[in-house]
Length: 189
Image 1 (cartoon, rainbow, N blue to C red):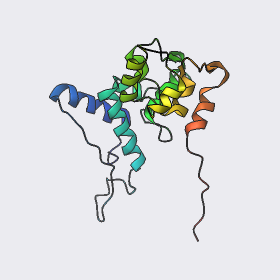
Image 2: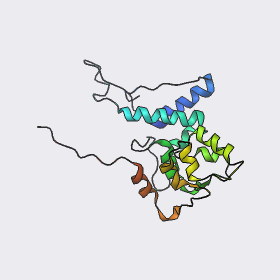
Image 3: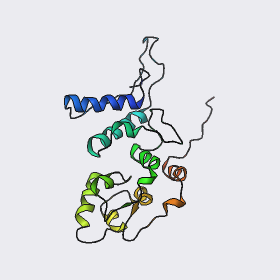
């Protein structure tokens, strides 16, 4: 990936087609790295390893979380998608920020599919939540004990002892909270 002008949306569409048509269990990605004396038609710069990582994360969302390939790279009315994944935040969080109307999700009432859409909650955590809530209301302390990413999940969930004010914080503010800080560029002399 990166040796041709394919977008991440193209790569994920092909990946999804391979899973459906050939019943593959796994697709692998590899970031392009130029070699000396390569064809002039190939790019001179290597593809970001972060892009490769984001494609693997997206692949995981398709295979285990029920996401469609086209919704992972889709844009919104405010920011039309260019077919590329956001390299600063993971695809699940990016989807959640684009689809704020889907949240908050109730840990005590919502179904498995909705719980799997919450950033910070994995398949194992969701299965544990579903077991726990049969006997008691789910609390933030329970998520900590499950080793879920509570910091990432908190803006998107409602539970017995947590009710966020989602209307009070914008998607841009949430994105800034989770994106890595901008690096200071230096000039090498």
